[in-house]
Image (cartoon, rainbow, N blue to C red; front, side):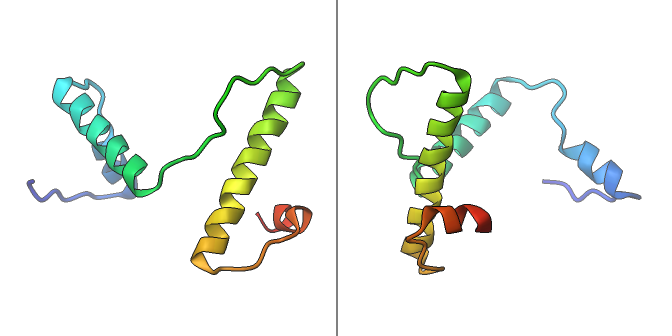
Length: 91
């Protein structure tokens, strides 16, 4: 990969953009997502869920994400988060 010089942060950010992706780009993105999934898999409860409203579905997703974050914190030994309401305030 060639070394590039930028005069501003804006130029550096624009250099990261891929305006016309080709098949190689999509292959690399697929590889990246596959590695990310292997490193940190996202568990989600199995099954089909029915919700009465989008709000109820969003609450369910928030609950799943909060449980995942709390489990991660427990595994990393960051803090004991036995009280979900207290943990919500920290996130």
